[in-house]
Image 1 (tube, helix red, strand yellow):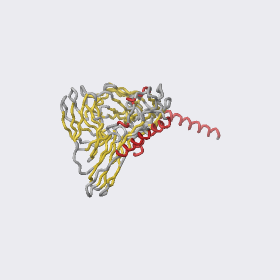
Image 2: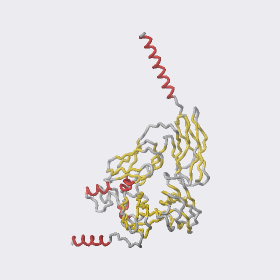
Image 3: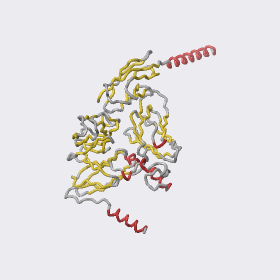
Image 4: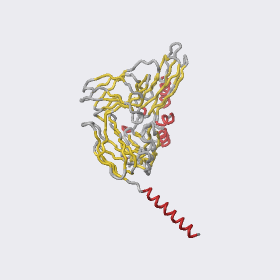
Length: 204
Length: 242
């Protein structure tokens, strides 16, 4: 009887283990294509990204330097749920304040002396402009994306995003030139890579 | 001598206090002073460390570390706005200059329907457009191309937090706050303002600076009221008001 119970437990464990492994066998593919825009359009930086209903990315912390009274990098691209850490790495004793009065993500992190680190989480997708209230040229921008599947392009052109899990996604883009907008494309990722997609930028 | 100087300063301050203008019978008014101020954490630390000769220096730095050109001089900010939402409003006209240095003024509070007289002082044709800011909407208003050296007048149709941008030059940018029926006054920090001879009723008073943000206050005026509303715009006062 004991033997039978042992065998049953063993087979149950085996089934659980194999089904768990099968659940984790998710295909990851690359998604590539080209951004189409009218010739001569004055559009520069674009962030192509993929958005899904079921994102489960690991949250990360991104660091921004404040050396020489500049936020560096001036543009930080993160994923919803990530944290940003501002490091006061000035060589001299200079304090910095970090604040944003953004509609969806307002914060005031107080004053950070040389050597300090101040951080803030970002849970809302969107663009956040932030400033130092002490130094007038200290301005920075954070773009909060819905997933960590993205590519920053300095000019509209070819894009390729690797390691995208299978499922239904929307291909979209952040266009910094406010005269233009993107026409999002719905895509399904299965067992093969998606190639030659076209993402159109059109005038608003 | 020092006491005499202090007395003179106090006397001058008392004389310079905000005075309410006399009202017509049955009318009401609002007046006050609008000031921009540094963040309270900066102010507190400066007071504790007792370092700086200028109230706008960073608390722990000496004059050698950062030139004063790099600091926000709140006492000298000259693009603060106070707006009053008045149902019967005469449209205002605002003048804007577009040059290679940028758009001047860099911030402007307007009412929907106000006109913008835009001077293109650059050497190139400019295609300007108004757009709602990224997180506030998708609205856009495009203006006809404006030849170099010419000017034209456009009517503002969008409402909200806006940007005036040039299609071919990313450096040309001005921030606008646009609201229906808003009468605006542009002020320097510490200036007084006045809206006189208003009909009794409910009003919305708006204080705004493009980088510091906006505070709105509802006001009820009865006949004969002449209400004083002073306001300080700072990062923390804006955060508290949200």
